[in-house]
Structure formats: structure tokens, C-alpha cells
Length: 135
Image 1 (tube, helix red, strand yellow):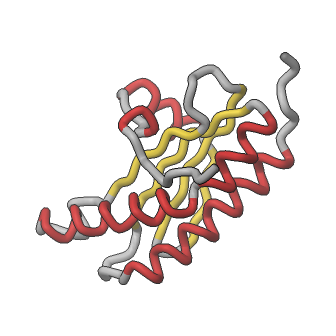
Image 2 (image 1 turned 90 degrees about the vertical axis):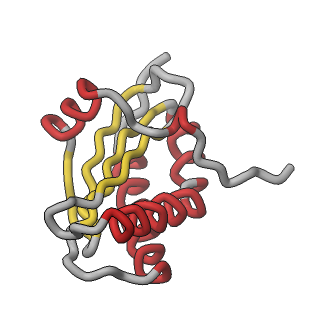
Image 3 (image 1 turned 180 degrees about the vertical axis):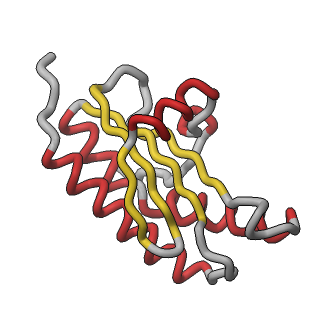
């Protein structure tokens, strides 16, 4: 069976309360040019991972550049999310992730994808260290 690499709306992290909780209680690390904030929880929703991408207006004034970087980050996540999703499924956990772009320069897709792989690998290591909930 082939799995489709999709990024549907239900996997997008939405809602002021959920985002606020992620930034207040989540853990963070930097894989330059990405700052990754994540929170691992017992599985409640149907989705394994809820994700948001952010490119600050302070660093990129033009919406065209901001939107391009967000599109590249979403694409890099979409192509590399499968191992994380399988690890979360096997442990009955879910994760909320925020990818923030912190560089002042625009990077190419290969760089962003390599850093995204590294970041997702680090999150996967944290998931494997987390005790799975009883249930």
C-alpha cells in the first residue's frame, strides 16, 4: 500500500488557545534557520501531529517572500513527516509543532528540507524517550 504525502487542514495547528499553550508549555530548540517549538501529549485527537509554520514580518517585509518561505517549509514537512507519524502511532501519542523561521536571509529548498529532516529526527528521538500512556 502506498501512502500519500499530504498535509490536510486537520493537521494544521489552529486556535489561539492551542497555540498559546504550545508556546507557554512547549519545549524549543533551534536547527538554524528554524526554531522548533513542540509539545508531546497523550493522543486525544484523530491526528498525530498538528503543525504551524511562521515567518515573521519583522524579518521579511514583502509578503511574497514570507509566503514563499512558508510554502517551502510546509512542503519540506509534508515530504518528511511519515517516520514521525509512525513513531507517534506506535506509542499512542500526539505532538503539536511550530516551525519559526529565524534567519534574515532567504534559504533554498534543499537547505530548508535538510534542516526540517534534522528537526523532525530530534522530535522523533524525544517521542521515543517519552513513556506511552496506558490505555
